[in-house]
Length: 365
Ligand code: AMP
Image (cartoon, rainbow, N blue to C red; front, side, top):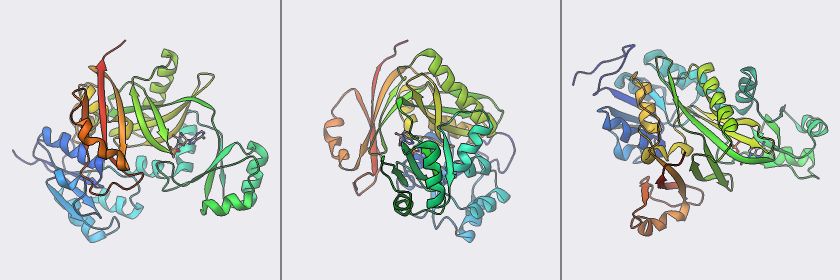
């Protein structure tokens, strides 16, 4: 099929999608892309990673290798991300040569917790109370306002609960500041939540959006453990959650997938915690339970195709296989109700996401 390069409209099948990052999100995106006839070219510092194993081409280079980035940009028709922490200079280099979807703005906002929270507040999306902290004295000051029932987080490079210190009632500002070891941080009031939700939403090049049903997420040691779809929450809570995701996607002028992680307070209010402008772990259930998965929606959006239907045909429970959990694959593969997804990672290190399993249930109301 003819390759349609660097055009503004839809990319025809046969076009090449460049993906920054080589992990499981890139792998599942590449699988969805292949079904629609696209080829994926992965840019990753890692050889033989999860995405490369199923992709058309791979560039193995550091994320700030300008020459490799320029060659990569010239070899692809559009660039997207499965990983957010790409250096600013690399993003601008790519953007000058090829469409980058979602755009650099969405990535920059999601890379920094402080910018992210300021942005959410600026568009009227509520969050937990927070304060920027630059030294131990500012932390002491923040304790005066918030008390110590709070979490100190690095502003950048925090994921899966990393880069966070929970304050104890006797926490000393100087010790806590030293323990975090950051130049700038954010102190967030701890939310006494009833549950954690996320909404995964796709937004196309034409500005139309399609969201999946809100789901409930349970974490273990700061890492997502299970996602239940749909979340068992009041319709008013689900409505607030969806409205927040729609507002955020629109304000970012997003093209692709956006996940918004949220807390539901005991009073039934919804607070946004974090956004990710890419397919998200809490959306993996959509592969097996929805008309179009989050990965297909992402591919459709970045290639300028109309979005598919996010309708679910089943309810679902997704469980991550972390570290040595993956050794259960022999049992899981025999379970007729389980849909097993393994990511092709060789070493089952503690805390590493090795795969996931989704159990489908007949759809409720
Ligand atoms: P994060 O890295 O911000 O996504 O945080 C990881 C997990 O830590 C969240 O999913 C929550 O379970 C917990 N957490 C983070 N921030 C807060 C908060 N302000 N209040 C209560 N729990 C939190």
